[in-house]
Each structure stands twice: as structure tokens, then as C-alpha cells.
Image 1: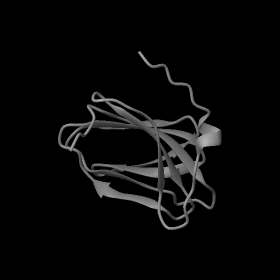
Image 2: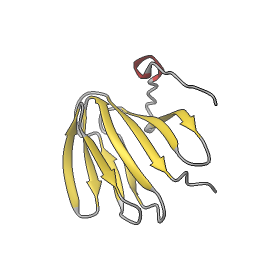
Image 3: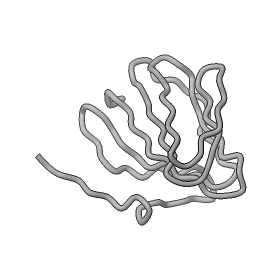
Image 4: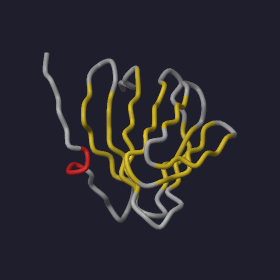
Length: 109
């Protein structure tokens, strides 16, 4: 078994053109990424029919959209988007936001 340790602060990468994703771990059972959003960036609404997604804010703040609900998440807050429910993110602040994102099972192509 491979063991993984990461300094998520050092691994964060931001891109001016769109939200950046940094993979931390991936297996046939799940994936774990950093989502790095500059101010004004979004993750468009989308749905995963068979996959649950967890958003956990490591730094900054954002608005998460899950179904017909919108909630402000700040550092330390977590939201879960159950399979089959439309979800997305807005960094509607003037600061960078970094989230730890886990999805299971892995949405294999």
C-alpha cells in the first residue's frame, strides 16, 4: 500500500483563466483534489449520477450551490453534494479560495 502525505498549502496552484485542480490522490474507489479559485472564478453547475462529492474549505470563502440551496462556506466548513444533485461553486469574494474535494466512487470514464 502506498502512503501519501501532502502539504496542501505548498501544492495550491492558481490560474487566471479558470479554477485550477491539483490531484492529491486517485484510486479506482475515489479521488481527492485541491480546487483553487481566484476571486470571481466558478465551478459551473453539474451533476454526477452515481458519485457523492465533499467540499471542504481550507482557506478563503465561497458560495456552494447544491440543488436549490446556496450556502456560504468559510475556512473549516464542509458541504456534501449527494449523487444525482446539481452542484457548483462561486468564489464571490476578493480573495483566493482553496478547497479539499473528495469524490467517491471515482467517476471513471
